Image (cartoon, rainbow over all chains, first blue to last red; front, side, top):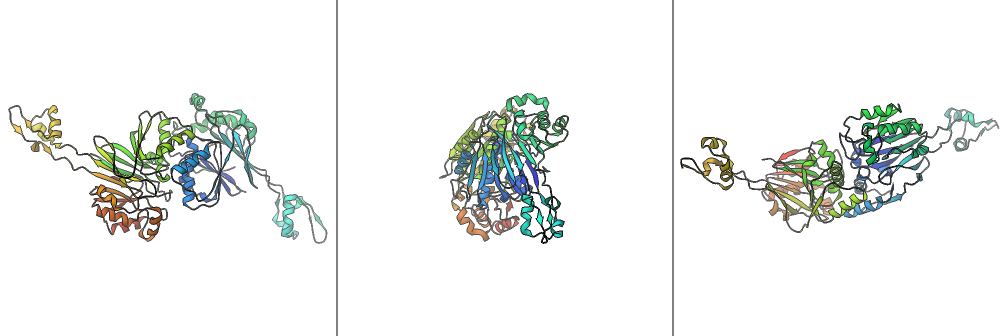
Length: 304
Length: 304
């Protein structure tokens, strides 16, 4: 089952060097979710052929412009295209008021309902779930209320072995119990076929953690522990560490330190400062501490 | 002296087929002005190497999102880059409130002053002038208060003939009077050299009219009469004329009719509906009525 992340924007604060502003698409079992929505995100959806009509949930980490200024455009475009399905937006306090004021001032009347779900950033809470995924907030340390998001794939059922269906002439009606409840199968002549001959173990559930924007904080480690993929902001090189004290961002080294302490499988760094035209040095700095580090890049699709 | 228009976005309502949203740069004598600012405009400034620090005036035609959603990004980027010079924004009522609310909700504190200049759209008024240009509003016919803008180059002084300076040993101190006041020159031995031997006539002042968004309305003709370049929206083909009744936009044929009635020199059409992937048919339709019609295109630079 698919679980992948598509990067739409990687730059901090302002666009530069063809790097866009923060936005990602997370695909869990072929349902797609948007995370953050900087200006220009709808252009990136077009560019990377992501069908916007498939998006029903948008998760907003915080209300700095480089993470939200793309929302009015996306929302009004939906309306101009005649969207009817509701859109759920999960965000810290204040977003609902801003979106409503923006729609009012720009004379926009929507064809669909936007449902706002406000969370506070004091503790990790479950903000969304369906049959495939749970989305938890990750309280971060930034200048304004900010949360990352943990996408936790739900435990799937055991996988049936197709050859065994044929061999034992298992009817379709019996399959659900075998897969989901671990039931054995009794053949027409009373022979019991034990479940572990009919099925393979369920795959281990995967998790993706999105942590932007944040200063270095070990408080997130219990939440993101052992995740398969961690996106952590790495706005600066250690050389410019003084900047992180004012802006409450992280260096590449700090992102890597978090990845190492949390024992994640892979680290993806992003949210690069415009002071760096060439961002390879950020990856190199992180890799000295956590070798399995990748650079986020517009259009990158990464399996979790 | 330079007088040219750079097109940054040409699509109506939503971005499509790599066409951006309404925004233009008008350069008059090497000062640059922005007209409208759809989402993504700051990306286009980067793409076409337009130094944003040179922009001090932004003219906004109306408050529909596809003409203003790029403003918060531009304004906050200025601040992040440490801008100090004030920025003047000319717009119909409502913009100031929206920008201020947006800055507040996104926790943005500016390093410079934004000065708002509100105009109403009942009559053509002079909203800005300096030594090279006057900018007048052009009341348009749209669903909400909307004005186009007329950039009128000011009458320049006569142009001095360099060879005559040498021939008559004219001192630098005398040149201003000769150029700007049409003075004759009296040589050291009392000979009077008449001004028309020293100078060439001043160039005829040029004018650029920007008319988007609008239904067909002949009320604009007295204002845009004889302009060198008219940008007129042409959202639809006549085939889809019914759409213009609801949306108060124009067809390509209507844009051309206005250009013809106003006897302009050249027509530039833009603000294309997303229903047209290929926009050549719009130009062809307009050209049957007004042959000197061009299609607006991202990155196009046109001399007025």
